[in-house]
Image (cartoon, rainbow, N blue to C red; front, side, top):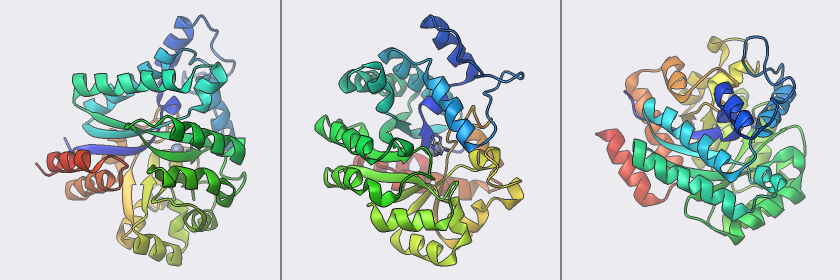
Length: 319
Ligand code: ADE
Ligand code: ZN
């Protein structure tokens, strides 16, 4: 099995329907209205309705241990597919809305990372993610919280949500604070919006990675700039196809991005929503084993893990 590393997966988007049902039952909740379609899959129709559906899944998470359990469960499934490292997007907005203190929520996640290492030999780190459509003030408050209570497993600041709202520059204070305090920086861009969204992100924020960024393929000058600056793309083809960015795999720019020399990694984004897994992304990429191994090495190199862990993981991939 090819060793794999994943840099772009959302904790709350990783919950399979069966686990969402279990958590709802455990918390004495009715399943959120409209969560599932007739086929038992999460029901959504386009990007914004996907974000709604994602929020409804978040509604079944109530206790600190719920967050820890979904992380542990994801790491177990990833390890079974050959993942050696996962960097997970975790939103502190969720526990905050539930009145769970940051340290308690984080403690549950840290415990899950430690248990998964012990039980499955997989390593993981966390990216605190803000939600773009909630606005710059919330993002700054989130960054302040993360910086005020640092933990070696929380390695970066990220941002998802509706790319159509606000501009990267609006979030510069949050990102500057994170960057000045030694955190890595990544942002979703060039997913539902075009190359200009990626240009703005790399101009106005100290990011070394772009979440998705696939629409950079529409602008050769932007590709050159990404290569020149060594900025990596967290490419999630299954997500892009499910959300209708591209009509079919043949139209997806993955191969063109690799050929351009941009640093490309492969991830699953919100796997059960998009009927994918990290293993499926590797299997369906249409790339040979040597290229897939290189993608894993790139992912480890551009990850926000500490140098000693990167070195150890790279050794394992070479072996
Ligand atoms: N949050 C979860 N998945 C996302 C995606 N693909 N784009 C933006 N925000 C997200
Ligand atoms: Zn994402």
